Image 1 (tube, rainbow, N blue to C red):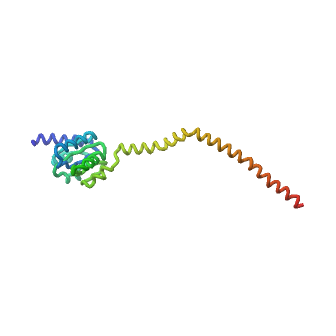
Image 2 (cartoon, one colour; image 1 turned 90 degrees about the horizontal axis):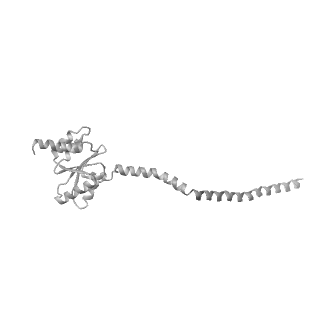
Length: 198
């Protein structure tokens, strides 16, 4: 690779990293051409950009990036490296996990997301369990809709409630009649007591 080619390659990596919020570096070594192509195809469907890169060029590109210090990831840049860029935090981890059900690779080398570094393949399941922005929004919408659904349900059941209240109102009226008769009975007793006291 000539010096000019290296400069172009570094610039391509920098362009990928420019506004990236989710950066994974994976080891695809050991995947044959068909499996590697399948992995890329699945990544493309999930809007994950995959680029096989030279470790030295990846490190140089990351060193030139402003705003994020990627140095924690550099120690993992050994062997075959594939840069994975996504908008969804857990998408690359889920893709790797899904692929690993049949294969030993890809393996996670390191990742940077939500301003945190994850170094080592042992972090793969933790990364896969991170809720994506869309999942979190869905949960929030579900929580917000829950009280609204209760109100709508209550309003839809309002005729039944009105009938039930009408029945309740009629029932106490029927009960009030014996209640009025009850005070008369003690009054009668007290009048009986008065003459006996005389």
